[in-house]
Image (cartoon, rainbow, N blue to C red; front, side):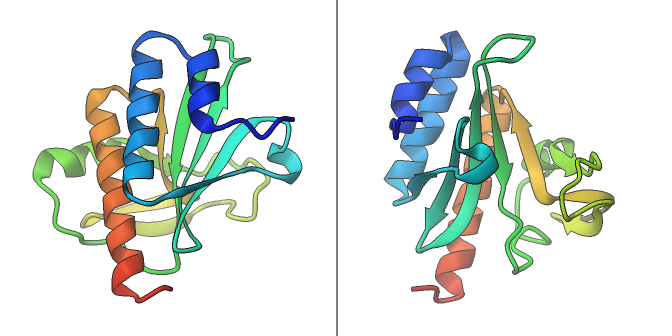
Length: 163
């Protein structure tokens, strides 16, 4: 599979508002000094990117051009070793959006099954996937939340003094 830039794939695969929001998100990541790395192994033949900051994972992005609904895209948060999402101060609406996007374990065969107990912005959840949050085809409000999660993760990495 070619090493296309994510923006090229977004332009080629997604349409309408999904394209606009995905390009906006990629731009937000680049403006915040994030790097994109194409997935390997299982993900190598898919449009999948690992997004890093200072060599630590921030999020993961999949652009799917073969779904039943047509083209779509997904953002997963990183489940870092710190507790960056437990009690970071957010306004109530942003917390609600984050809670609506908690990624519950689907017993996919990954090493997180059957999920874990996690505290997400002050609320406890059970059976949460290794990737704490998942945004499928995010609308404008969900995209704002995903961008905030990236910003919080960047703060977490910077505060821990990662080089």
